[in-house]
Image (cartoon, rainbow, N blue to C red):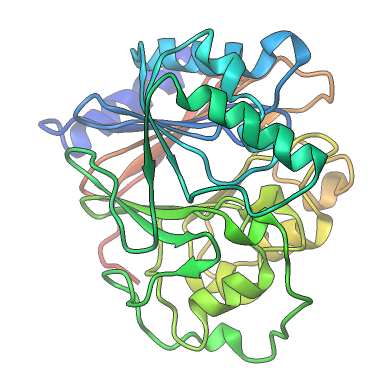
Length: 340
């Protein structure tokens, strides 16, 4: 049955736009960090973060396995969103598995102290293996056949709305600010990926107040098809103004069994207007069965997991599909007749 479902999904996807090469996005399980591997229609590769260090190079091995599935032998661009261990810590182990041509970041670490300096020094060593590109809001990564627009970096945000954005955001009303976040989370590099009519957002670990600045009172971002849930689903992020303002068809959560996946955040996302599905890399132990997504939408159900991934394939028509590697099943999201 699983093989039949996958083959049927592939056939349906091919019928959606047979002449176009698909965009592939692999959400690699790095146990509550981030490692999102993108294969562009032109065959270029973009890796967003590299997960944790240690664990016998577990995360680097999982990224390499996803790259092999995608036919990728090198990372053309490695976007390091911010200087935290679950995002930048795995970069040196990764280099033992895959070469990296260009490192993309927001500049030097804004945090200080022993741990911050150790991360900075590790990253400096990694930089010797390739060239460096420092980005600011409004920049676009030099990828062919699609657009990756930087919308947040180093605490700054795009000055003008992205195409399709700029509308008043009704979900800002009544959403209060929290204490300002002095950490690298608020300095995260966030981007909007556009492939034809398909839109995907990844704002890394951007926190509450920066989210509000980005989407209130007018939302500088357009409605998206797929939203990578901010900050692994922590409730320090994911304000209703952001989540509801983006109006995603699908949300994907890169949580761990014990990291991220706040019950409040999961409930908020599942109540998002127009949301069709929430997909998770892990069952969140803190959230319980009532708040987690259905089992068929979760890649890893057990805390001691096998590192199952989630794959997204998208076409310029706006249609896309999502595959759960644990079950082998694929769900197709067909083209909508009109944008919201």
